[in-house]
Length: 205
Image (cartoon, rainbow, N blue to C red; front, side, top):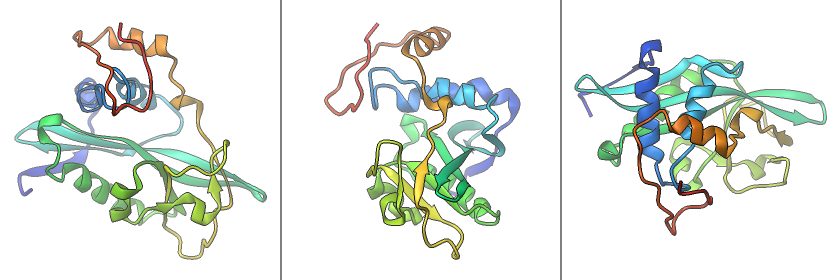
């Protein structure tokens, strides 16, 4: 897509990006969504990495975004620092055009030049395997609740053969429903729907 520009997010674009994230995730995993609040809170979090916060711009309009956070693995020998990304969002009318893939590839090319040992995410393996991600279980990495199919790893350091340990879920990602509701009220009102494809339950009001 030759008319697509990928660049760093600007501070004054924060609300526009949050609106994009809301549109991209609305009714996808639950009635409504919480990813726009997560994006909002990330920016003031100590684990946020602003230099790895990118937007995709098309015809002077932001159509996609990706952001990264610091992550950690608790191992028998101590803590291992890793990176994680998400949300990755593309406007619904622009989905299916490879914009998300371009954002991921662009950012991963930069991440691979750092000293990070791995990128750890939660996601759909059938989608993320194209970027080199593998099931975390194959490296001995699990969540606090055990091995989880959606936990994926992209190993960046060839010397790192194993990642035995527990991927730490940061408190930032725990969003109380009342906080989500209060934040969402600052956006234009939108109807929520329960769909059979959703994996989480949630209120419709």
